[in-house]
Image (cartoon, rainbow over the protein chains, first blue to last red):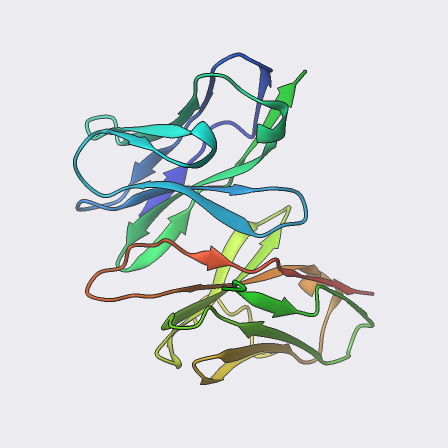
Length: 111
Length: 116
């Protein structure tokens, strides 16, 4: 079955430290890969996507993601976390012209 | 652009009442999605329209739920009769899809439904 896994329900990082939010997927073919962010009481916002080309994709708010085809992973990263990065992060993958969503990872950045 | 506009932002109703949620997609977008978000089940796709036609409604929980898109600028999600387990945040999202689906959805701010 097609699926997206975000193995961590929550990630805690100190402000200024690097952060990683993990995502792995099981989808046939060459899917497009996405990260979205949801701030409290808001809708989801697009952060970045991978379609093809360079495995390191840069997106909004200083985030980047690394695509690894052999590991079927698409981890979200940021070199230096900000308290304002605290939010819920979703990984998503296309399959048959629809999106398959991960369960979300709550990112908490502590001052 | 004003983005995807949803109304109402908050709705509190009693079990058995009819609930209608509304969505105005971004102008020029030809695909519209309704999602439901709960703590227990996360983000669930309810229904997907393309060019105002329902393409996939397999996520609609049961016959109490119905969705329409009478034109390119308006969609409704109706629950009749509503039940407490329908309490959730309902999101509408839109996208322009051409030759290939890129998946870059634009979401509304959501409608938070509480059924007592």
